[in-house]
Image 1 (tube, rainbow, N blue to C red):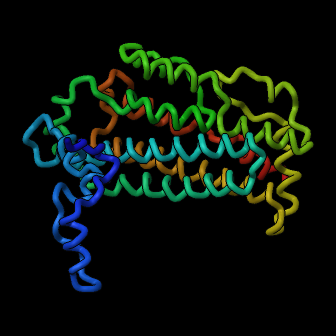
Image 2: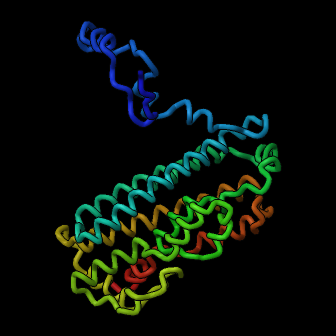
Length: 295
């Protein structure tokens, strides 16, 4: 009896395929497979293609849908990197944590570049399918909420739309109350003997961290020594890169919406452009930015 293989685990080669490969000319790719190619089984191309389900015949809609789906995948990757960085910080493995954070900056740049595939979208083209989206809105992306929560941008209100999916809702509630990446950084600094106030370490995790003078002064002191061997300076710069590119992505979101629909209300009931502008103004890692004024 044969066993069906999971799409994420390529099937082992049968004897005939192995023999064909062995007999092939050196350097020639394998072109005979008993089942789907290992690439298909690993990547799941057909499953991905099946997810591109436009709701209209408008030629602009597939690009809008695919870019949105690609962004969701980037959100998932960012979440994995930052949660890994948190575990590494908790294990006091700063080098590994910096590596994870630096990788995430490259992911953020690719996320930001995704807007390039939609900058051609005119109001007339967007109107060609926008009404058929109903109340669907990027505001409802729960993976993006995980990204925001990990960056310390907390708000209980954005969890509410997901009550209809109990598993997702519970995961978001957990993430809302859990430490952000910044919280784990500050806890690490405190273990290193730096003067992080207890009020900051023990604060309510469900609300956004506001700049704290003592934490700002702490980072300012780190930044007085920018030599290559200063690992805390390296950490601060990696976090600043994250904050900068994430802010750029949000600002480009505002520009893309302004270009495609102007100041119309959002499809999910928000104020649209005005709501996005307020959201984009929220600062990530505020003490790192404030420290630059002090140095």
